[in-house]
Length: 75
Image 1 (tube, rainbow, N blue to C red):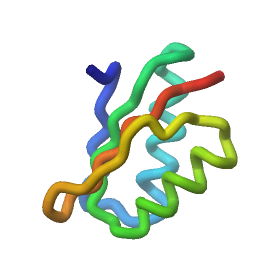
Image 2: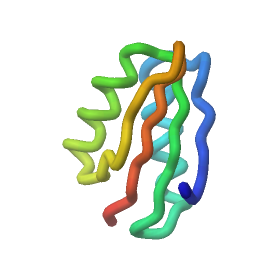
Image 3: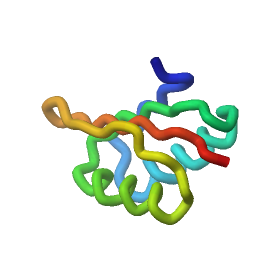
């Protein structure tokens, strides 16, 4: 179960990342954020975001044209 869901469907780079970054600030350390996006570039974007910020990419997947990412706030 996730702490919060961010619907970023229909938004193009860099908006899903920017909105996720802002949403993560409202989640307690150790909490999770689910992001739903339709931009195919978001797959690489979220991998890079997690690598550079120390955020944990707990889960990622695709169902149809929707990409799902679960992020855990580490700090």
